[in-house]
Image (cartoon, rainbow, N blue to C red):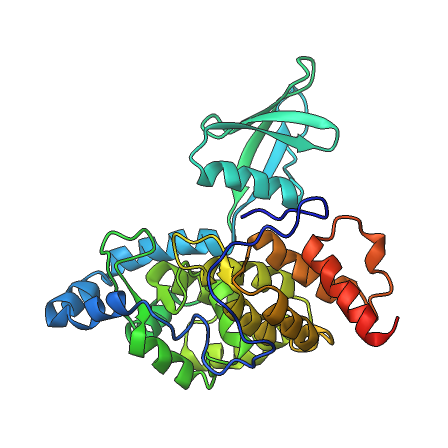
Length: 352
């Protein structure tokens, strides 16, 4: 499914045809399918709902909040020299280095290598020490600095309880329950957002880091609220314009755009049907001057093909880095063949 560049063609696999330039009438993901899961949720009955509510006891809720808070606001890491006589001054690692250490911790690794400037360090997360590869360099002690979101756990629990229901499987790492099905639609109705055509819905899903389209599991819901620092419906409703503007004005677009591809996939597929990709482009790239032209061309010339992650991300690059007249297109030799073909078609059509 990887992107083949000019020498070997676009490398897109078959799924189904798309309709060029469609506006999103029905969300390609939010309201689609998952019928079997929704059927199971709706027929678990009172016993399933009771089981879900029991899981909202204070101990479980506090544990879920702490786990979700760490995802929403990962800890920053600090270090100090361990040499004798050195001042006890803790200094923060750069954000990128903290992210590397957090990634090691999430993977369950005890040790791993990181770079701090020109120094290579071996981090030991059990002994909380970072040892330079240079044997004469001074080792450093490590500690974390936790950040806590400005949310009230009790208020957040009350907010979540209004919309949650049991969502199988019960042993899902993000929680045995979530906001799904009719409750999902009810939440967005209360937020005054139409999830079928408002990019704010995708932006909220990205903030939650939801793993499935149309579902916010317990820890995902908590994570999203922690990122936005809201713990009730009114405050979350007030955040919707900000989420929408963040995507449409470009600040949050790269993150939400990249997230959308992964959450829109139906396992085990690793490619997105062209029709759905076109609908998401209409949602995420409404101001791209060439979007409708590109979608119309793709509908005719990419029939029976699907969109890989690499091609999906290259569309964003084309839309945001190349002017509408395509005057700078040839400056990047890494464009895929399918773009070459579109640009050739476009220039011929315009008489360039």
